[in-house]
Image 1 (cartoon, rainbow, N blue to C red):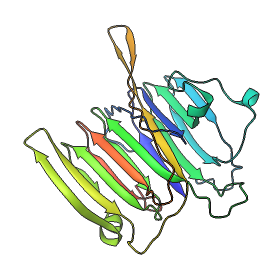
Image 2 (image 1 turned 45 degrees about the vertical axis):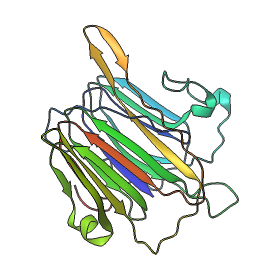
Image 3 (image 1 turned 30 degrees about the horizontal axis):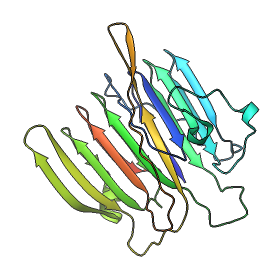
Length: 244
């Protein structure tokens, strides 16, 4: 299973967590979609990775196994959005005024149970930038978009398993679109894995970190879930095996 996140500057951050979802604002002055890293499914799985760069882009392909128990003394320092070890993210990708392109793969876990497949809980917020999201074909659950820009969905995703469940317009401000992705005959009974995307905003010399924690409950009946808020940009959705 993999998710691809081409995230544009300004001040972008992508975090993967088993505990909760925080949200990110992204700004994208460029209309160009950054190229993705080469496919590297052969990479050894890891956990609790932190890559933080100032004014330098991040292009990474990483395989995460959330069941890997990395000794505490070998883990990177907690970031300001991670209060305790219990809230530690499986992955932190952060760049200041630079692009983040992440090809994140979830590996088969090292647990004894072969049925363990983490569910995804992803929340993305974009201030004035575009959002490009590629989801795995076995994604199963709701997809919500709050946007006043154009929403483009690939024919493969729109025609195969995406169903509109609700649309609400708030005048010229924004439109809320709710979809369900996945074939109804699919049954999911796995623990959950949640994602966090966050942006730092710098205003008049001060640094402000905005976040919105959402508690995630592990349940046998819980589906995947994606929420996207794009205030001024466009939203592009497709499967991860399609070409951007």
